[in-house]
Image 1 (cartoon, rainbow, N blue to C red):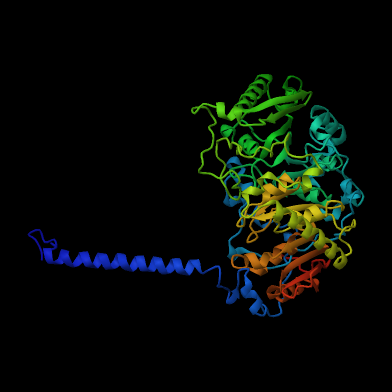
Image 2: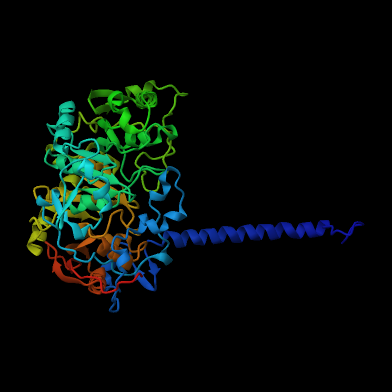
Length: 600
């Protein structure tokens, strides 16, 4: 029916017909939502990915055979990909802004841009020099970068002699050597001498000489630097056998849990600590445990003597220092010690200071909407993460000293589902037996042939703890999708990071001697395609390096087939218990050189 203006008019009967139609539509939507909920609730039982059935860890695996994969062979990437870091690739920087250096953060390629090729080593690559000699020298052809050598030669970061790079131990703030610099720091912080301080993070690490020196002092340091114009800082560190990871404090949290590091260090790292509302220093505050130390050398410390060399004015440096002091005070840091170019602040040991902060102070305390340990693509927020007051024994003065803390059950295990003293003790004893078995299967484990080790899906760090007397260090990785056990790892005096194995790891190619995983594919195959995980393992594994894969028999044959396609040599072994369902696959990556000189 039309009105006088020619427009349609809905009569009363037509309106009545619309109402039941709307009700039917709502019922259909509700039923679809209900069915979708049923389907989603079942996704952990049966998932089909790329036409192959992938199962969650359960007893159902015992009734099936194994994943079958046809023979496969991967091509070589071009030589211009020899230092390919997929999620921090300079080729993709132009897509991202330079504001707050966001281009240096993780930006992983979409799946249709992923490389399905083997990253080649540089021409002339040699097996790395063994530890501890590697701390002082490495092969030039393994990390063939001259830029950092030329730009930092006056600061003695490194120097090229013949076929090698030598590391004299110099740095921007310690041209006379890192040993002397660390000695001065140790005089200011006696806790560095007695096992109180065990874990540290070095932001803007250079070639990681500070972290390398602290290893002899019983301190395990995560050296952190972005892939930037300094070229290969982290690659140099790992080539030397020193723990390091690619990263930058920009717009996202660092991939570490709260209240974890005993000490944080910045030696002229040029991070603008007081800018953007102090958000970068707030992140350091988050990852430092109560009572932890923050050490700063370089601008604006000792500005009265140093300002002329910083291309600034004394007034500007005085203002910067006063702003820094004010910010640190608002975060409940106290000046602990200061001498010459080094200043040390200490994070509050308890929550008394935070409890006195007024509601209208800046920065404010974080509310409950953001989990303190959430640290995988989690945006930085300009607020103070206050330590949980129920954990009385996790502060630096309360936690046992090293090495006692390694085998002491951490208080924060209570945060873990089913975490208990018995589960911790069982995990410890289990890994001692497993490592004994691994050493029989892989005699190089425990020798100087293996230095850089990664446990790709740790729980409590038991694998690393069982290797503590060997000449290795272990990067403990906890999946960003699994139960958060990384605080337990750090409370034991070990180091690690969050990561999602559906993406590339934050490191250069050829940086680990041994990769270990325990049921990773059983747990993650419903999310991550096996092929890409194994290609990433090949990228970060050194030539002649090893892989220990402890996995359900359902996956082992397919892993071995893909490994063969990546030029790995593998052999299956039984577990220490002779379990028929679980297998141990030992693989070694072969050394080969690029035959493809183009790009792929």
